[in-house]
Image (cartoon, rainbow, N blue to C red; front, side, top):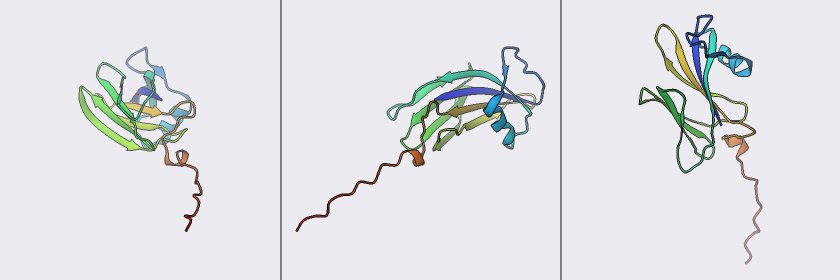
Length: 140
């Protein structure tokens, strides 16, 4: 799995010169969403694995982290800011899809967390179907 911490703003530059302008498919997807910011900057990117037993904690910044768990046909993502849970999402996450969570920041800016499967991973009902297996009829 991959998680990114994104800074959204209408300013042309991020207040932090270490932030990289977001480009590619993710930038396009964010611009297509009904969000009010025109520019997005990547603050941090983490790759990680999840399992069905425990939540995986992924620290995105000093103030922000997520906990992610595999629920079989979907994922659960809990978002924490300033040490408090601010959001929770339970949903299928098919290959190519991006789960986006976020919150407001000062001065008409925002921070977003995106979570997506990597390398063919998927947590979707469509890709987790078991093949139909014919069972013999009971004998009398």
